[in-house]
Image (cartoon, rainbow, N blue to C red):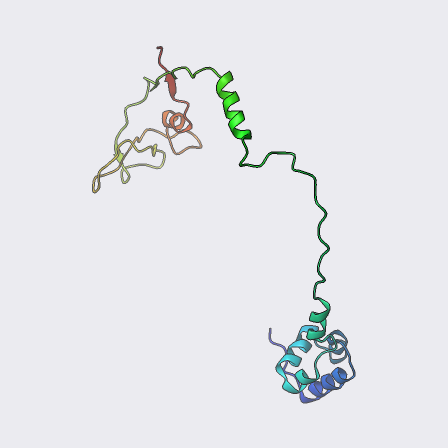
Length: 174
């Protein structure tokens, strides 16, 4: 949407109102334009720019200069020790004193009832086939996938869905 161009009468009226010290908002109401349009006209028109708006930018900038802040009052010492302190060394020593040595972890194996993969290529997979990759091909070799029927709401068959969640492992008796 393009606004109508400013007429010479409107520009002259804006100049008169600027010289009278009116703000851009009041000028906009008189002329029937938006405040932004009036500000834009004043910035683009050299004669109006020399008159300037009532809220002179340099005057406002001088008003906005910050006064230096009063120095802050000293605060109480922090409740925690700084990071470079011996606090963490003490905690580490305390932990090693009270904790027994870790036991050997059990070995994990996959379920024996894992289905034999159908070894299908990506092109051979059907809509409801499992997309679990079953090989690690070298460069230029074909990727093969499980190909069994997918479980509901998953891209994998029931077995590979468990594998992806880490629930397929059982501990071997030591």
